[in-house]
Image 1 (cartoon, rainbow over the protein chains, first blue to last red):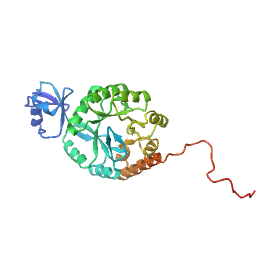
Image 2 (tube, chains in turn brown, yellow):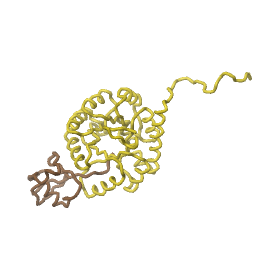
Image 3 (cartoon, each protein chain N blue to C red):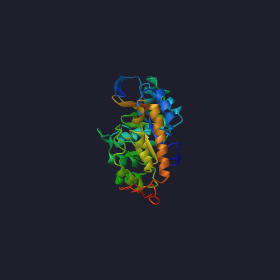
Image 4 (cartoon, rainbow over the protein chains, first blue to last red):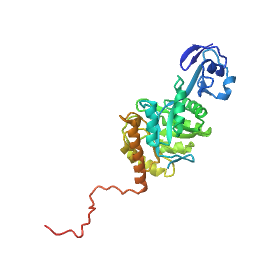
Length: 65
Length: 254
């Protein structure tokens, strides 16, 4: 499925947010997710389907002021 | 020491984590500063986030995630939710930027976002201006801490409106107040503490100094000096001289 991950268009074999994280090697990483601008809690990732063209954001703690 | 939402932190110095020359210097600067709170952001995971989190968790400071770069209520609220899950804290430094060049807060969106997040159980630290009405609205929205800017973020200008900050302190004597942004020198930090602020939050002044670790130490000394001075009840300034040496007893030598 073609989707946008962190601003980049990707073809990913994933049907849910959880599968997308696993496919990206982030299954065990400390990250947070939002789909099309809406927060997806970790507990809901496996039940949150991806749709063609959707935008998935995957963030982590970084340097900040 | 400052108390934020019932939690006492170890130091009136709050330090940002951006722009250090290296992670090792960041860690050394934190140790030299004695800071009790560190701000962090959320950014797209590109491989560095996991190491950074481990570094920060090893410093023994409380993490305060921010919503830096958010321009809308929706962005800020979504970011806050992601931060709460990721870091396991309901503290959020709420930034809703309204003006790109000055990085000035959009105070209207800020109040809306603060109200929404407070209702959802967040403990909101709003980056705001020193405007008394805006600050009053933020308290009404559920904030129990206010973080007015001293000057634009990263400018190093210090306290642009000391009279406004003094008025804010006087207007809300029981609200924890933090000067956030604009501090460039230890004297700026000391002055904020002398004015009765509970804490200062700074980043660039330390991270971009030629020697960040030494500057972190200087800032720690400054906030301690300023806090001690406030507690010592400083004299009022006046326009004319008053002799400090007694006049009585002076020898007549004319």
